[in-house]
Image 1 (tube, helix red, strand yellow):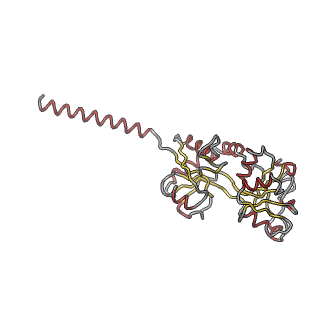
Image 2 (spheres, rainbow, N blue to C red):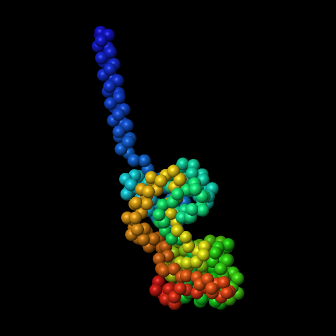
Image 3 (cartoon, rainbow, N blue to C red):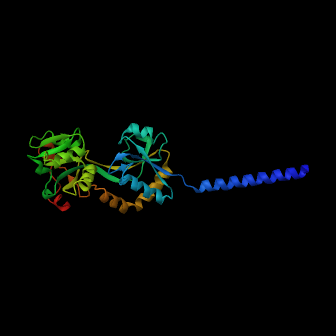
Length: 284
């Protein structure tokens, strides 16, 4: 083989190699990177790493990713709203967004930016369905399960005509209610609604209570440099309003119009009043 033919063969092989690399690179470019959202692994109705029900945040994440033409990848976490968890996951680059963070600019300051609100979350009043017309004024003389160190406990503990039954979790509050240890429960609404729907066959009415430190919006948090992704997700969320409502009903989130605390009644020492007499009865 002449020198000229050897060089020609080498040039041909090099061209073929470059062409194959270009094709492989184009194939990888066509494969969109997954949308990685941090979700707590064992916290239904929000998320679950195992079992038949993945949780509202997981199902919503899948729908958002599908609209962005990206695969969805949940990044399971163990903490709930904890700043340390956000630092070691989202801000450490383990996920692209953290779904379910409080939509509050004071939460971790300028390090985070937020999507449009996804859900309205908070505490709820749980009463037997036959007492669906009951309001906060009807708690006089009743035993009411409240979570330790929660806003409902702070509201009711100073009112001598309401007997508070302190519990450590919404699950314990619902058990005390079903076991007859409490007449009502004023506890974290999403878990109360989930338990009521899945375990208790909607035996109770679960109504959110609006007031200071009682309700707030949850959104998807992103590192402050991810404005492009945040804006893409915001555009998708505009079209997913109906899907989110469907998921809320599927997972038992309280859907009734919230009771509103009467600040004057509360500050005077009397039980807080509902916004109207029909506020609860319309939710039955």
